[in-house]
Amino acid sequence: MPEGHTIHRLAKDHTPLLVGRPVALASPQGRFATGAELLTGRVVERIDPYGKHLFYRFEGDLLLHVHLGLYGKWQGGFGPAPEPRGALRLRMTTPEHAWLDLRGPTACEVMTPPDRDAVLARLGPDPLRRDADPELAWARLSRSKRLIGELLMDQKVLAGIGNVYRAELLYRAGLSPFRPGVQVEREVWEPMWEDLRVLMRAGVRARRIVTTERVDRDRRSGTALRTDAHYVYRRHGLPCRRCGTEVRTQVMQQRNLFWCPTCQPA
DNA sequence: TAGAAATGTTTAG
DNA sequence: TAAACCTTTCTAT
Image (cartoon, rainbow, N blue to C red; front, side):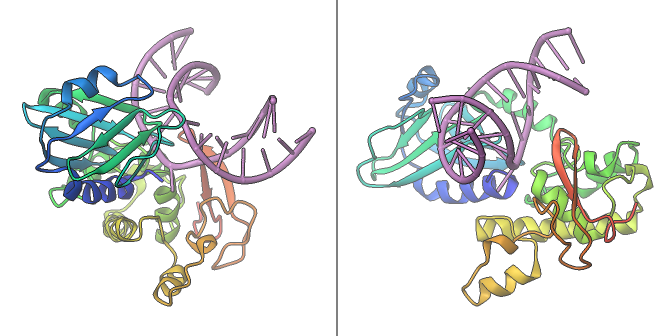
């Protein structure tokens, strides 16, 4: 689930539930017990998504920082919350009887504004944010000898992109993951940035990553085909949707990379 | 029941 | 570069 589109979706979903309300926090698992106690009863002032990070600002200049990591998950509902099962890091409840459960995050911690600024300082522009400066990404990308497939995963270059968007963005651009950043032309990169914004915004709306035209069509007709959502991601060994060449995979930047050697020539 | 994998990041060596 | 960490889910035995 959690690339940047998920984080922005969560901020949109949680804002009407939490902002302006005093929230009760509990940590049935116990690992966030102290933080939950510190924040309980405070009003949530706003929720800011940035890359893969979520910041819930509480009154009193305190922030709840959440990073879902690889398998963190939020679930929620209205009415009586279910009996806590398994490892439940955090449960938030509102006076209106909305509840939100957080499991498995990499980060769930209380922060001060300077702490948050330190986190933001490590992030490049987030394509989903209006205030994103694409020149910053270009500056870091175009001066690096590292491979474009590595650079796209670096949150200091671009914040919010993950392994699915990396593979799909490169495929749609017809660009080899093995091209060094310094050898990516500006005329190639600029449309990629725009495409990434389009894809990630679509991901926020659809609540999942959809990069293929076929799925766009199917969604319009109300019959989304889950298996057709991607061009290359996790399609290792299957024929490329456009040319039929076998999609390849190899670990790059600690994650499985997928690409079509014909559509993305080295 | 065990093991692997998953849309991620940090720390150790 | 490798390992650790957080949790769930699916597959194999």
